[in-house]
Length: 324
Image (cartoon, rainbow, N blue to C red; front, side, top):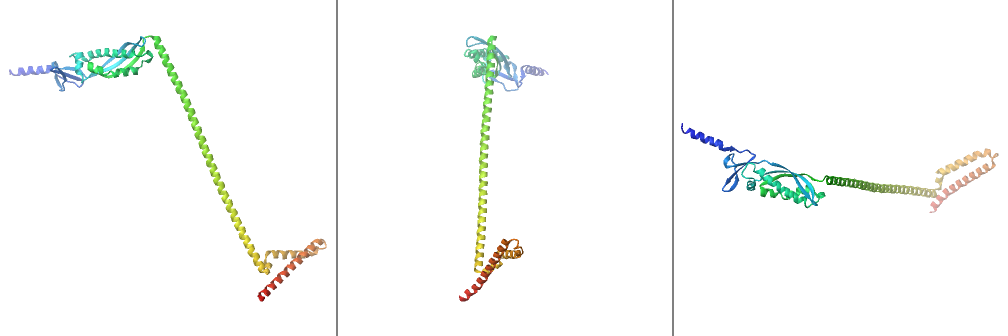
């Protein structure tokens, strides 16, 4: 049973010496003057250094002077964390202790203060801006990584305020005036844009109405041309019918000329006979109107002469044919 005691002692030493590494820890080791990382889950605490892998927040209130010896107060907020690529610089500045990040961040504050003063001394109070200062600090961000072994995770400028309240009020009024001026300029631009939009709309409407008028004129012109063509066609049809009627009358006259006996069958001869008969019946009123009786006698004589000529013509035609 005597061999159990050494095993118990070794087990107690292991429990006392070794610790379990958590995911938010960086475990450092030193081998022949070189600092490296342990990746195993268990590590000996007296031969290793456990650093937090989380970020460290810094809130800075810095006093600086702008161009013209105008004092200003600048508030910054920065989050830093240990840089794994330059962990040696962190140990050199902060030491082989668990609060090495806090110690190195103190030195980083002094560097940031100097960079802020470098920016403010080159610009007047009215020219200082959060964007300009932030860009100035980010351009020199590598300084903290190389000199102090810290990565600046986030950096923001909270405020830049002059110490003199009168200057601060003047800047405030100036900024208000600038904003009002920009607002008025935007309003005037909006009015100009609205007027230009209305002008373009009126031009487009006028152009559309003009095109519509031209279209109406073309349609009216086409309609008039069609009406003119229809009138021309109707006139040509009427002329064609008149020519046909004239040709028919000519042919009828030619037939009557060659055959005078056919005149007795014409409506004109029938009307003339009817007129003569009516005038003969009017002889009973001759005593009342001698002029009418005389006119009736003339018409009867004319009709009788007409009949005699027709009869003579009909008798001469066969004689001509026989002589021929």
